[in-house]
Image (cartoon, rainbow, N blue to C red; front, side, top):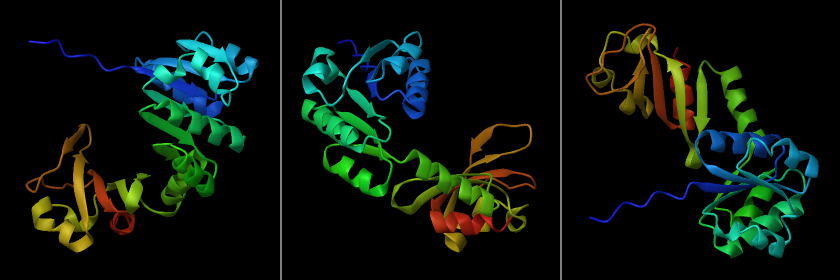
Length: 222
């Protein structure tokens, strides 16, 4: 039987500011080999002891990236800050290299659309996404909130009074509120998968999934 090949655990992170350096360190802690690049010698030196490889480079220089074998990496993150031109051109070069998975940081929705057009497979808007998340926590009764694509969200909230003492099947939450209880946590215990037979008790924490508006409406019941 042929041996199963190990995945290529390598990634290049371009831009070692607050976002890029934090992401790179998290990748390293997850046993990913990280090549960290930045045009600032000061930033590169600051992270030289923490990342697998680092180099000072202008990421808009295709030949300079080739000399660092960036084209051989399966994953790349463009974490460049306010220089929109460099962000877009770098993403385009990585796309031309044929890198399989490219993530790029955007500063606005318009910037995000351009990054997608030039080849980014995934675009993140850290400031916007975090602001939106915190706003939901401040204004609502949910304990945590994550929104995905297509208006889909997951919410952590306390079990509302109307479901306490009933099984999830008896509560019929999906038909009433359009949400699904994915997991449940009792005091002193860890999260467990929820089923139709799971009985909800007072003080239980629920992980609820569904359309963002539906999850928010359900969280308001608490």
